[in-house]
Figure 1 (tube, rainbow over the protein chains, first blue to last red):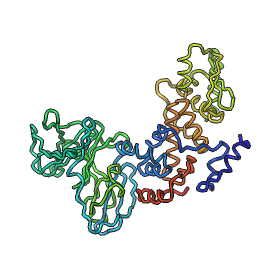
Figure 2: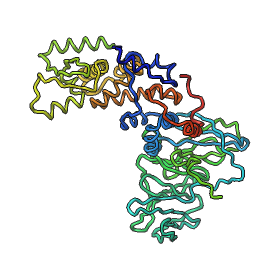
Figure 3: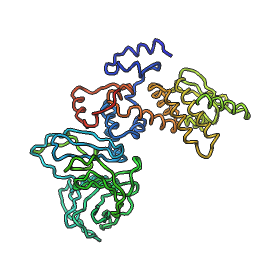
Figure 4: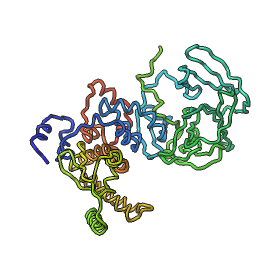
Length: 289
Length: 180
């Protein structure tokens, strides 16, 4: 198999992997995978855990490109991560993968003088047909406000069949629609609605297909597909305030089960879902001051 | 395991009426005579024979993107699966299939695995491709970025500045990777 042709190829210096070349590249001629067909790369991606997937974005520039393109798709079919912070620890927090049950530790950026305002009070919805960006917001008296970013016009929707809602309500963007989730775990009640924008009325949602909802105590809500990681479809995964458990309810609010995020020995923690593909990297956030 | 499958498949083919063979030529010029049901697992071969009316049994189909070494590996897999199908046409014997696949892939080096993934992609054998890409994913599980680069033979083409920025991205995910 070895001929002089492959020998000259081997002479090309490859500093970072020279040590391992012996082991990995034996008799078959060396073949670069930087230009691996994208569909193959995606097939390999799809079986990886989130953490292994993140590595693909750091391998080389062409992989980074396909990594950024497929990140959204990848995260949609993977379980979200849980981030939790001890009230005592100011410098680090933990990230927990609920599908692999592996815990990671990360350093917190310096947050002195900054305040977290929350993430699910308003949602940005991009309408492809009109190429307009609209921000939907829910008021505390169940009205839905719309802000058109292009025309800078703000208005309230006049809707039929507005249900009675408490303050335990939030907006969740699912793949296809904007969901309004009214969730009262303490009295085992839940209802999921959407707004029929054509008929301008509230519609109750009973089936989310293979999706589940991920709700936190007071921030970060989302929905995602459960098939790939064998989660419970049509369910609410809830992180109650200050608890180390994740509780699962069906869409009517009935308790279905629970699992532990971390050991219960450390108290007063903030637990929230961490949706990697929706978190902006510091590069994308400009500080207006 | 593999030798018993190979011998049983050859004995069954000799006992039945003369089986139709298809000739496939690899990039380095070697011609493989492959039993028809096995060759038909290669989608590229199946459509070649289905779409071209003027091909005969004597036609040698060239496969310029497949090396002889990769072809040996691919045929071993396809023959084993054909054997499973022949014995249990209703449902594959799951445990046996798994045992065969585990032993089969254990003997493959990373380089052979890569060759075969490219070949399986070109030949369009989705079952084998899914299996092999799954194995590749398993082999880079919890490894460092440097290991992934070496595994796929991909060069790091980032500038030092880009790399410094990348290092900060999702830093938490890169602590505690396995020794290479």
